[in-house]
Image (cartoon, rainbow, N blue to C red):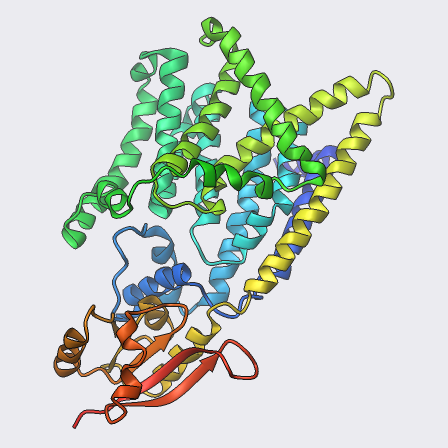
Length: 489
């Protein structure tokens, strides 16, 4: 038994293609390791999850906002409980990132072939958004990885009939949802895919229902807790928080940057690939339930179209990172176009297409990595003033003290103190001072508060004394955060 195991390992490493996969993963690990601890402070969204984790682990006075999914701070809480902290969390995000990379290869391999799997693995390994958010303690990378795991287990379990994988699909899917609520869109992708390709036939699949059951066993208790905690219905409550707007133009405007490459060739390849797939689907619509290649192309289109449409037409707010879910599918289309180009060129010279593909990917990799490096370094010191202010407040106050400030999550994480948000009027603020008696008030340039708050300390110098100031510049001419001690007569 042990001999067979060793033989399989040796056989794996004898395969040159496997060695290339390993080399790309090692490259991915090294470049991500470079940025592991480059960020000097957490951002607002990071502080939200870190503050919630400290609240659950140590009783810090802070509550996770109802629009935030709970899984990431829950994971952080476990590690806080065993004495680990921020450095460990960064390692975990790195591991999620590497696992996601390997899953892009596996999915590309089962939907197309191993060469397209290699192409999307390589592109994702140096993609600037993937690099940037691997260095941030946010839900984007873990959610994407769990989304990919759910797709992989669905395809292997349902399509390729490795039925035990279906149970893992349900588990990974609910984890993805609890990591980031919009990943629930995957359920609609799978449902539409099955309806179009099978009609209602899939309803008879017991194992698929077992997978749904696993999802619900975890989802329903959380939904009940969510309602009791926030008096809102899960998903509906979060979606109602945002005002729905049509952001199609802004969403499309991200694509040239997302697909940054020499002469925008990746964007051109994507457009060509989409045209080919849509043409195939339109001509072969009557064969969708029989032709396996058309089914795969339909799945790719749904994978891109539904998440993109949600953020472009419904979410009310959009950033380039919101399209994380569709990147692997986009890269598959690009990879497929590149291989088609290779098939054309190799008629004239056997290795011409391969050389051009490698050259294009290397140039694109250089552009993406350079852009990522600049972006990561520019943002590395973001919000460091809140870290400094929060740590100072923690050292110069008691656990029962509270403060008044905008940017509550920063002070939950760094100061570990109860933070009152500024009320809308000065009269309400005076009532807050009288009732809660906070020790400090904090004013900042980035986490803004009502206009009346900024001159208030100067107009009430007998009630507020500046004790600490943190600046944007070394010359200390542009204050970012000012801490005032409040005086009560």
